[in-house]
Image 1: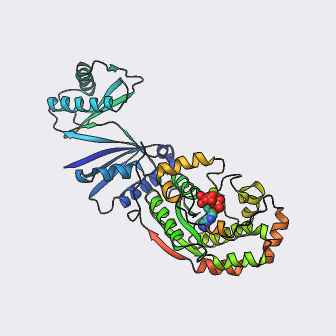
Image 2: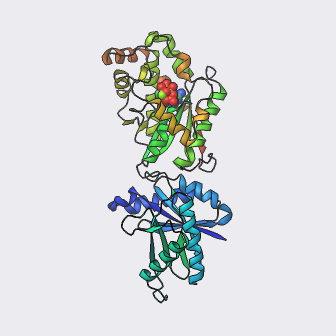
Length: 398
Ligand code: ATP
Ligand code: MG
C-alpha cells in the first residue's frame, strides 16, 4: 500500500521570479532526506505530492513536518470513484477533523479532472456536505469562512484530503546561499543555526576545541548537536578547530581582562577563513545582546571589525527563556545542558572587560600577533560530514 501526501508551501509561492529555484531546492532537500526510502516527490506551482510506501508513513510525516518551506501537508486517501465508498471516506475524515479539534464550520471543495463523472464538482460538494451534516449535527456549512475544508478530487480514482498537519514554514535550505555557524556546546548556537536554516541558509558549522582543556566529551557533545540540527539543515559539515595554541597565546600575552574578547575575535577570524574556503558568504553566531560580557554593543562592535563578512545573530533580541523554548522544540536543549566545559569558560577572566574602547582593544589585538596561530588552526581543522541521514530525526511541530 502507498500513502500520498499533498504538500503546501507558503512564502515560496510569493517569490514569483525565483519560484522554480525555490521549488527545486525543496524537492532536492526532501528527496535527499528520504534517500533509501522508496518514494516520489513531485509537483510544481505550489502543489506537491509525496508518494511513499505505507510502512514508511511515519518517516514521511517527520520529514515533511521538519523541512523548511513546507507550511502544511495532508494525507490523502485514494479510493474507487463509487459514491458510496466516497461517502464512507468523507465520514471518516469528517470525524478526524472534528476529533482533532478543527472546529465545526466546514466546507467541501471538489474538483473534477474526470469530466465524465456523473456529478459536477458543485453537486459533489453539496452532496458530501449533506452526508456530513446528517452524520454530525454539530457541523455547520460556512463557505466563506470555514474552520476546515474537505478537499475531494475526481481523477481516475477519487482522492480525499485529510486534516492538514503543520510544517515548519520558512524557506527551503540552500535557497539563501551558504553560511558558517559558530557552533559551541551551549544552548544558543544550535538555535541560531536552526533559525538561519529556516531562512534558507545552508550551513557549515565550526567548533573551537581547546584539548586537553576541553574534553573529548565536550567535542562529542557538539557532534551530537550537529547531528540534531543536520536533518533541518540538509546535512552539516562540522569543522573541529584545534584552538589550544591560539588560546594559550592569548592567555600568555594579552591583558587578562581582555582575554575573552581576543578569543572571540580569533574565533571570528578562523571562521572567516573556513567560510571563504568553503565559498560561503556569512557567519552566524548565537549571541544575544547583554547575555555575557562579550555580547555588549562595544564588544560586538570589536568582533565585527575583525571580518568584512556579514555576521548574523538571529538571537540578538531574545531572552534566554525564548531561546530555551526553541531549543526544546527542536530537541537540542537536553544535549546542550550536559555539563562539559566550553573553551570560553575555561580561559575566561573573573572580571572581563565589558565595554572596550574599539581603538584600544584593536591595538591590543594586533600586539598579540595571533594571525599565524589562527591560520594554522584553520588549516588543521578536522572535517566531519554529517548527512541528514546520519542526523537524529527531529520531532515534527505540533
Ligand atoms: P551558546 O551561545 O553556545 O549557547 P554561550 O552563550 O555560553 O553558549 P558564548 O560564550 O556566549 O556562549 O558564545 C557566544 C557565541 O559564540 C556562541 O553562540 C557561538 O556562536 C560562539 N561560540 C562560543 N564558543 C564557541 C566554540 N567553542 N566554538 C564555536 N563557537 C563558539
Ligand atoms: Mg550565548
